[in-house]
Image 1 (tube, rainbow over the protein chains, first blue to last red):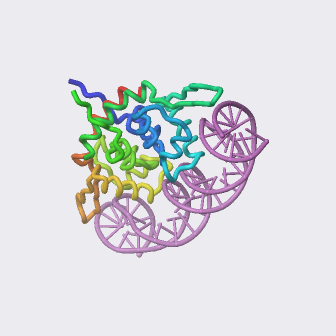
Image 2: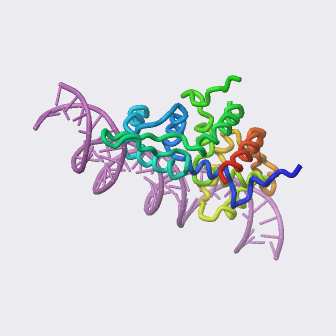
Image 3: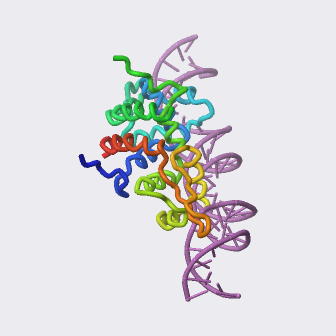
Length: 103
Length: 103
DNA sequence: GAGAGTGGTCATGTTTTTCTGACTTATTGC
DNA sequence: GCAATAAGTCAGAAAAACATGACCACTCTC
């Protein structure tokens, strides 16, 4: 049984995840995304103390990281939703595993 | 099969890990710890662009987080080592799992 | 057509994080 | 005794992150 190296400089998954999720609000936003689609103004109300700009940037970065997907539901009365992407969903088991360790 | 909730406000393991590891240098320091014991001045050389203070604070916080252990090897010629704690080692499989996802 | 809601952007200021460089205490080797 | 190495600490400056409040274009309801 050959265990793969997890400490090579090129590939450090921990660091990658930490970069993708680092910031004051990104983890909370990601967690809320587990419950269902997110909307901009709803998020603002769900995260007391945050700002329009912070939420805006966080959503953009989570999207660029491939963890969330931005969907335009309707244009007439503007309705946009951010949902967990496939990649985002694939991280759920990792978090579940962490849950056991970090107790 | 009942899957446990990972999105409750009280327990968010992702956020916990992110807090423990957040900062500009902590992830890299942790990764280097996977290779073996760390020493203060060696770390400074291994992390170009960092500062004495940043390394000092990062080591202290990783220690307080229970991920690293500080060992005084010798006193006469001062020799201190930081090694992966049990808790730190318990996270290796999580990182390995992430490695597959984040490619 | 006034007021509220949608999803934002932008300039500015504050707060937090990080870096810089000087200084410390002690030991080893020359 | 002088330079080097060990492992740091401390004050201050610079940089990055975050918050505040104003503003925009659009739609919907009254």
